[in-house]
Amino acid sequence: MNADENNNTRCDPGVPSIEADVSRRYAAGAERRETELCCPVSYDPRLLKVIPDEVLKRDYGCGDPSRWVSKGQHVLDLGSGGGKICFIASQIVGPSGSVTGVDMTDEMLELAKSAATLVGERLGYHNVRFLKGRIQDLRLDRDWLDRRLARKPPANETEYAALQDEIEKEQADNPLVADNSIDTVVSNCVLNLVRPDHKAELFSEIHRVLRPGGRAVVSDIVADTDVPRAMQQDAELWSGCISGALRGDRFLQAFNDAGLIEVKIVEQADKPWRVEQGIAFSSVTVTASKKTGADNNGMAAGNCC
Image 1: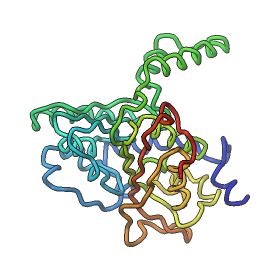
Image 2 (image 1 turned 45 degrees about the vertical axis):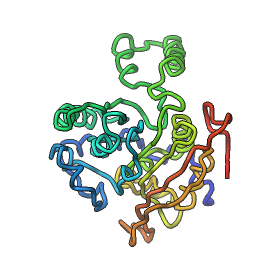
Image 3 (image 1 turned 180 degrees about the horizontal axis):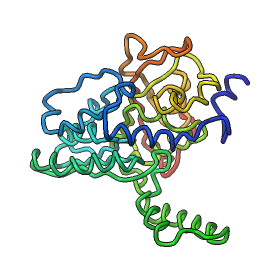
Image 4 (image 1 turned 120 degrees about the vertical axis):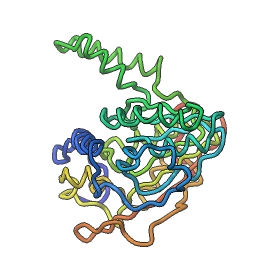
């Protein structure tokens, strides 16, 4: 298998059930801290004072994308976890702005929502909300889907097809995050957790929800070479932010391929976070912008640079 095949595996049965493994590990991480899920990161201590300790102790990230957020912005955090970056960003954008966190793990969402009321009371305003969704599909409200399945789960193929039609209608009529609605998309060590065959969709969704001229700021883990198939088959390494990491140049190209421009590394660790089987894994923070113009309505227009 050559390098291109290795990084474009589609529905490979050898790749573990990534979403289930990630959910299990991060559900456990919502209950107790897992030190292997994060890199050392320094945050502005003034912005941490209003955040409950149970959130701070269960934060898993590799950078601080909130440093690129501005007053009055509408911010979206992909894979918001316990809500730390959201609560930091809420103070920066202030009462005239808003912050939305999207996560798929019920336990993390419960932790974040339970803290949101307290943080709002301490700040004197409430501008943060948390939604259940997959970051590679920001159209579908997973809470809506949970309610729909509880009410009437499909009993046969005909009902399953009807459900798929309902899902598509819901995505079109009531998207979880609307087109061109976000000033800044942030994410902290989460994009690597998305399975290979969904990564292109993920970057396209970032492009879709950003307003023209908006910006993505993503802190994530990259590898210095392609991650081999054998490591991709290791569920522990997947959920540990290792096996899903893209090679550094491929990570940057993914933004370009989605139609984003001005892609650049704004922060990079001096030394690797971890070395596994001779491959160095390091944290980077990348910024990319959505260009202005008519071609930014809806999905990505293609490679813009």
